[in-house]
Image (tube, rainbow, N blue to C red):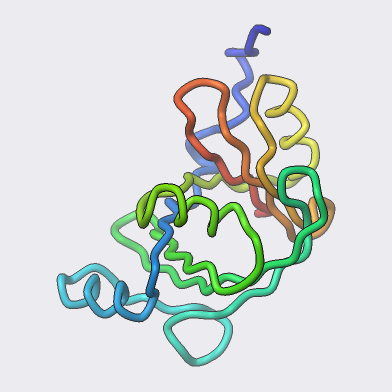
Length: 154
């Protein structure tokens, strides 16, 4: 399968964040802020993180899960912390198999479903997705390098 190098799916201006899986979001935030990384917060609520419920697919099967999310900017880069907090998810699978660490890079899109389909056609594996036609996202594992990419609405 050949890639269309004249019109790449992922473009630099659309880069959004780096997602990092953690075991304990409170301890991680406390530590990172003590080193000067942060501040971490969420637009929703008053705290440093927000517990978000999702309903979508996991490996092609219906799934529901929750995840604690927080973010901080470091220069022009956004760091997103994710602590799986309930249900089966690709995030919990990563934590169980690899421990804490960088999980994905994320790009913004105006057409998550269309871009997800293009990535699959280019050989990416769909790991999980939710609400592809509204304000949703997909996580895809690239066919080379094993990099997980999130495509999310702009």
